[in-house]
Length: 147
Image (cartoon, rainbow, N blue to C red):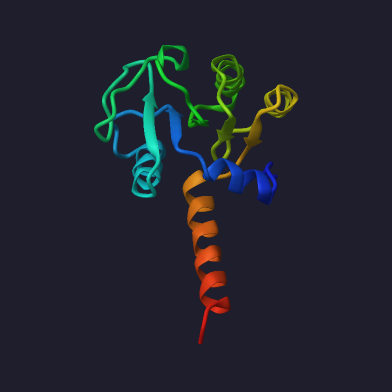
């Protein structure tokens, strides 16, 4: 069951700087494709991976704590067992939101993040949601525009 209401999803997707945890140069991984999609929509995508590789032209960092600038969203592509610690780190660095990708589920971490006052979405794909909202906004504006 996905967590995150429509208003929260829209608020998170309306941000600019995304730290993508689990993003590496492996183009066969979901994080790589989602990061490319987010960049196409004007998001700054910061790779966070133990190898600290540059991905899509953006220098990487081994941990969230090493990022020397504010992060709006921490987008998590690690397994559920590791996700709670990443969520706690997101709170510590002052991120505005945490996004757990499809099949990344930790209900206790979700509650901790929400209790800390951050927005959170869990078990959803940020690229899918961005495309859905964009398509909805486009069709709404088209149908309500002049004939």
